[in-house]
Length: 317
Image 1 (cartoon, rainbow, N blue to C red):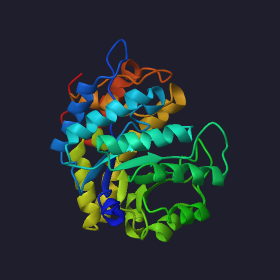
Image 2 (cartoon, rainbow, N blue to C red; image 1 turned 90 degrees about the horizontal axis):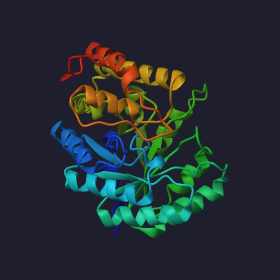
Image 3 (cartoon, helix red, strand yellow; image 1 turned 45 degrees about the vertical axis):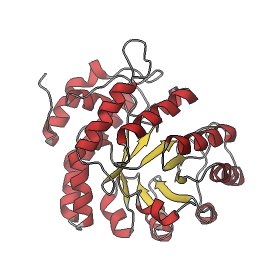
Image 4 (cartoon, one colour; image 1 turned 60 degrees about the vertical axis):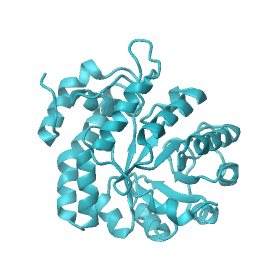
């Protein structure tokens, strides 16, 4: 029997997308290295209550991986986590049939949730998306986190969210919006906070927490998990000035460099996480093509960014 309230409560904290590691030079999946980095997150305090792990999401290179690689990577992460925190398995796909297979695989390997976005490439209708989510919900008794990837696919309207809330295992909403004077991001949190665990993918952590968001997308955790744990504690204690100061000192420089790389050199997700992980002595790798390898060109700029932000364990040049 699916326990909706239990699933919703266990989704709170840092929402950490675990990068998938690849071997040089053949770029086959390095499952052992990925496991070691999961252990680093757990040792740094990412546990139930402070965070959850997202396997094979965008920063986990899902778009360049086979179905079998995605499942095996999620299984390795789930086994390493060993119940110490909850696991979300990325289930983005263009095919409802594959989504059903991913939902069933996630349940089998022990994940508590799947992350589902509107199918990309074609501009599908709202009814297409509703039936797509419903198919996943009917395939397995597993929590579903709806992710509105508006930059690659159709948007998700208020009306659609109201319908999705009626599907028992839709329990999470990972949300961002383009900037707008209509304050859609704030309105969504205010409207759906009592029905869904809202995950802030917009970097407005102070205002979103005040409004009722309880999950927070935090890439910084991949190389400094203690920072994310402290951030969650500060939010819960409503030390909002401290949270905003930390966001400006640590998170904003990371996203500023990410934007620079996207603008000037390559596109994708997770490549800057991986470079920062390398710079603090963790296992790392490049992302698979077509994302190009940033490590040579941006290593020193990333090192200086980390040092200025106060990130511990940064290696010397």
